[in-house]
Image (cartoon, rainbow, N blue to C red; front, side, top):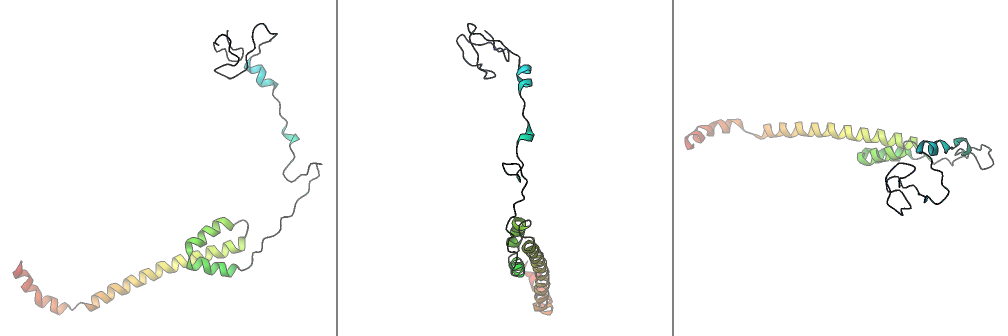
Length: 152
């Protein structure tokens, strides 16, 4: 016996096809096999029957007002972004749609914090290198250098 839907060879007494999973009726029952193409053509779904997200069940379109989030204290969040830039970038990513003023302040604070940190690091490195050169007494180094070459 073969599956009427996919044509797979079936074991005797099988109720379901092992290939396509279709229920197989026995030959003694009144069964009219159909092809897979016929089954696919029988399926119809009307997407117009589904109400839109902003429509109620009775079909009237009502836009539900979302309570506006309080977007005050944006300056305080900008300071937070300045001192902890990674938090500023993360909160910007989370709040850029819901709280745009806070998100903008966080991003500006975080960028200023990162840029200022880089500038301070460069200036600090220059000062340390300059102080290191100033602390070295090159005259005494050249006075000792002949003795160093003898010891080698």
